[in-house]
Structure formats: structure tokens, C-alpha cells
Amino acid sequence: MIIAVDFDGTIVEHKFPKIGDEIPFALETLRKIQANPHHRLILWTMRTGKELNEAVEYCRERGVIFYAHNENYPSEKLDSDTPRKVAADLYIDDRNIGGLPDWGAIYQMIKSGNPYQPYANTEGYYPKSKKKGFFAKFFGK
Ligand SMILES: [Mg+2]
Image 1 (cartoon, rainbow, N blue to C red):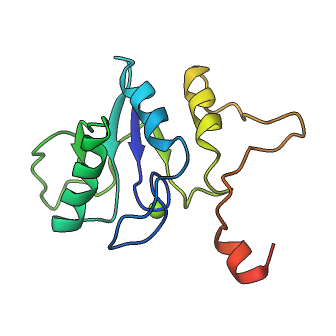
Image 2: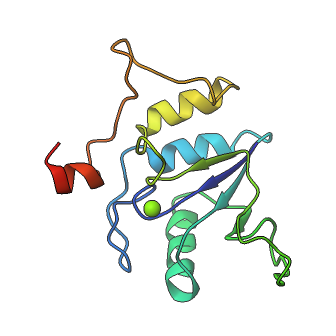
């Protein structure tokens, strides 16, 4: 599977342009995923230039090496006919509707081979990361 992964708010806490603390188990999970030759990780982020390089290096130093960054393959030529959206089978992003599942849940969804099947705990909810999401910040939920 081609898996596009966001950086800020997904791998690390959102502190752009700085790099926040790692979201628990994000990098450990990504290392496990990249160890499977059937998967290819693409970094899919709003970061460009220096900030992109810092994110790439942060992950590389921690053993996560992406196949490409904001492109379908390394050194992809972008022209006016090239879609901006990276083609992936899965996108892991904190702005996903429903929020970012816990990285343990993300791993189980991918490992199951059927990530489109909802992964729910015994209460029927996705395990959520502990960080406060957009709605919690503004609506106190
Ligand atoms: Mg994000």
C-alpha cells in the first residue's frame, strides 16, 4: 500500500514552524510499517523548503525514511497537468474527519489488510490520541 503521512499534528504535536513533541508511538508505528516491503510511505505535509527538510531529517534520525516528500516519487517533475494531490491508498492526517486515531489503532488497521473496515474498541469508538482537537479547543468537548 502507498501510505501518505502528514507531519504536524500527526507524527508530532502541531508547533509549526518548530517541531513539536512526538505523538505517542507515531515513529515506532511508522518504523514497523516501513519494515513491510508491501508498504511505501510518502511524507505528505504543508511544509516546504527548510521546514520540510527539518521534518524529513527529524524522521530520518529516528529511523523513518520516506520514499518521497510531497510527491509521488523522488524528483517528480511537476507541471500544470500534475495533480497536487499525491496518489495514495491511505492518508494518515490529523485533519481526517473524525480526527487522528491512536497510532496503535492506525497500526492495527493497516496490519489487518483491510484499513477501511472501522477499527473500534469494545465501546465502539476509535481509540483517540489524548491531544485536544479543533472542536475541543473551541467548544470545550
Ligand atoms: Mg497536520
